[in-house]
Amino acid sequence: MLLWSRWFSFKSHSITVLFLLLCSQFVVGVVGGVVTPAIENTTTLSCRNISDGDGFTYPVPSYIPSAVLWNKDCEQAWYSEAGEFLSDGHHQANKTAHRLVLHETRKNITVSECIDLHLSVTCHGSNQKFKHTYQVIITTDTTTITTTTIIISGVILIGLLIGVLICLHKKRRGNNGESSSLDTPSTEN
Image (cartoon, rainbow, N blue to C red):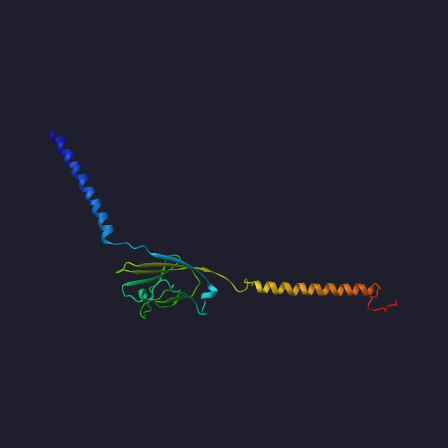
C-alpha cells in the first residue's frame, strides 16, 4: 500500500510539473512577446507602367507611413518571388548589391527585370509589421491594340465599303443604257 501511494504521488506530481511547464510556456509566449499581425496588401502593376528606361521601379506603398521607413528601429527588406533577399533599402558603397538591383532607397527599388517582388517592413519597438506583394503583368507593345484603334479602323472600312458599293451601282446603271429621270427632259405640259 505504501508503494502504491508513493507511485501515485510521484505520478500526480510529475503531471502537475508538466502542466505548470506547459502553462508557463504559453504565458511567456503570449505575454512576453505581444504579437501584432502584419498588415498585408497586394498591388498589381504593369511592366510598362513601372519601366523607367533603365529598369523597373517599385514604389513603397502609401499605406506604409514615411515615419516608419525612416525609423532606425524598423527594418526594410525586398525579396524576389522565390524568397531571395534583394535589398534592405539602404544603398551602401561597400555592400555588394544583388545582380537584379540597380538602385534602392527607402522609398523605392529599381531592378533590371520586371518580376514579382515582396516588401517587408518590421518595427521591433512598436511591433508594427507590413508585408506587401507586387504582382506584375507582362505586356508587350506589339500585342496591345486599343479599342479606339479598332473603332477607327471599323469606321474607315465601312466607309470604303459603302463607297465601293455606290460606285458599282452607278457603273451598273450606266452599262445598262438606262438614263436617269433627271437626265431626260420632261415631256409633260
